[in-house]
Length: 249
Image (cartoon, rainbow, N blue to C red; front, top):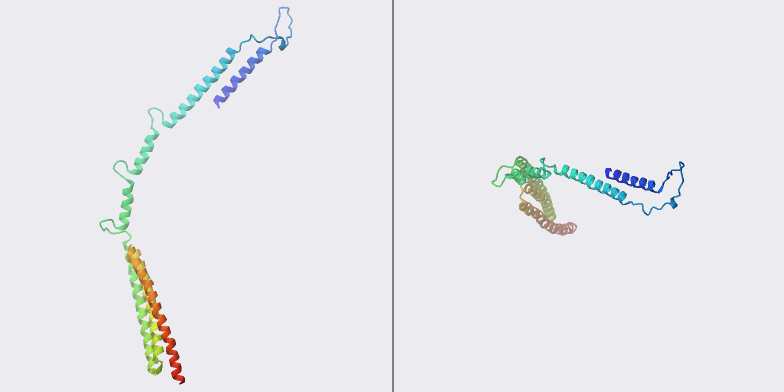
């Protein structure tokens, strides 16, 4: 802004001086003023070299001194001038604070945190071990309940089937298969539930391989028991047909 004001002032001065050159009201010794046309004045001998030199000098000095001082002040402010704090030192100090300086490293902090969570390399106690223990204990209880439930239900199915067969011996073939299908269904449920709980237990304990094996075992159980159930259903249909034929003669 300062540079622009000086430049405008210099241009105004040139314009004013040129106006003084071409606007002349000469005074003669006659005591009266004489008006002279501009066209009657020969300005070929009027030298503007000195005037232009002064203008150029003023502009050059303004550009040189003003802009140089401005840039110098800005650079001085950024670099902190001589004898003050260098911004590079500030950056270095920040980096040193983050990295821990010469004797420290932020990776060591991260490593310590991971080591604390996982129990460390030497098998230290993990801070989440109590949580894992609670989860594992809950899984054991659920698996026990599921197994007990299946055992009770299957025992009831077999008891009812035996009672029916005792009353209707001719119905033994379809009734026994139906009982087998019922027990197989609850055993499949038990194995699937307990297998899924075992997968959760492995994941909580960080045993990825164990979790994968248990998940594969669940699929294998479903496939195998599904095939067995299909065979039982076929036998049941055949037995029902035979029973109906035997009853009807």
